[in-house]
Image (cartoon, rainbow, N blue to C red; front, side):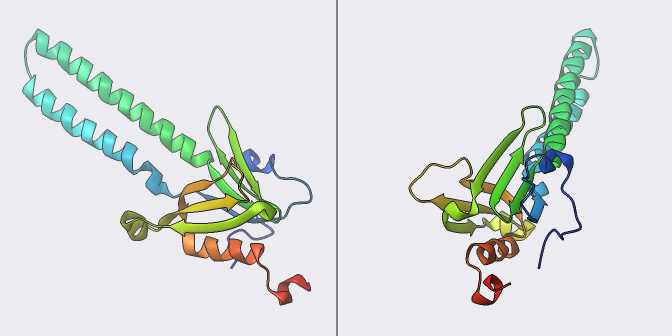
Length: 177
């Protein structure tokens, strides 16, 4: 199974980091579960702001407190929108030569590890990860600190793990092509 077919093209935010001789094999956005905490913060803030609105219902001092409470909630909402925008441009990409993790909306970060340097790769899934369908990749190379050592919130971790392992350790039939 290929998660990205040869006809698919990476978005320009990722494509600019691919070399001309690389073949894109896998490209996935990180799992939306990465947004659970910001969602909980916005909803919790909304509930608290609603309760405080009821509590500070009247008077001039109450009105000022209400304005402050709702401005604070608006800041939480803006932070949530920012996190969603960041998530929308973050990608995990595996090419025929390397693995890349592109992150950041304003300050773009690209972490990379050549496939040939990977000496060990594993994934783990928390209970919540198993329920929601995400996991974490742990990559190791020969005694070196790499820019890409863990990739959190990876969707389809078993499928991606098998796909990358197939690339790292091709069968004899695959190498004859």
